[in-house]
Picture (tube, rainbow, N blue to C red):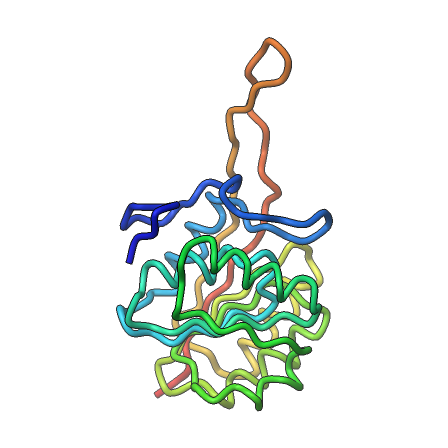
Length: 200
């Protein structure tokens, strides 16, 4: 379901096409591609994106899976409105934004997920425990960790939940950028991407 702003069927929308706010995380394009590949989406997948930030993942997945549904969860009203504006920019009708703090607000969601994306959050272990309850057998969770503490918390939770097919990828991405009269490679912030599936 390409939009006028991004008329392609491939993911990888340039960062500058998204509206953003100072201090609000924006998943950089190359890291977004890694994360989306770990979700293993199907055309009609229902994805919960918890801690959706700028809304780059909901937009990309909404375009990739026009028959699917994306539920973007964001606790801050201003940021939730930013996600809605970015969805409007790309003419998306299959993304719903839920304003609230996870895991408490998850019970308000009417559609059960087949895929869950968790992008940070202090209560990462509580969130993982909660989403596992809603996930069907063979459902898949992808979570990001930007520091050692989050990496440990997610790994420990996957172990406690008896997740299977666990994968861990650490990104190492450099982009060519123009600085003054020269071009240099600038490293994107490295993150860990962890994924696991619920036992049948």
